[in-house]
Length: 213
Image (cartoon, rainbow, N blue to C red):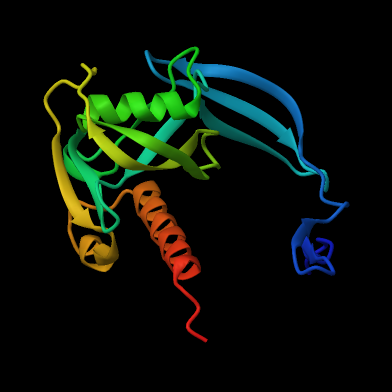
């Protein structure tokens, strides 16, 4: 028969309907950490953890420079978005995704987003606004991606670090279901970013519609 304590809910709903972390949930204690491998871009770190119930486990994660990164939903007009086709070494194939890149030292996310647009798409944006912050595989890395909506575009090209010119495509933002049927469009962050941007634009459109009543 199991001797484990009964499970309890991790989150409680507050009176206003929001979800809050319960006070009893404690982070595991880090007993030891060490680097187990190093490459030009990544470091693999092992963590020895002790959880609040006494269980101990060893986790491994990727660490890096934590410079920050940006992904842009760039719209040349209210109905279309720019996507790039680039080689993805992890899949050994070309994929369709949103323009993105690292934040350089001394940059804020707005400046980095505009620079990356100029390097990858050949356009700048007069208006750039943050949409959301996304993570990727949080069990294995703490990488965070800032998603920004870029509008009021203008032609501007800067040299980038891409090994070959990127192909820039224009797609209707309301045709996301059709994009999902493509074999070359599957990056989760880009999909989430596009749906979030689409919903934001729909909400703004509804709010700007005149009240006919």
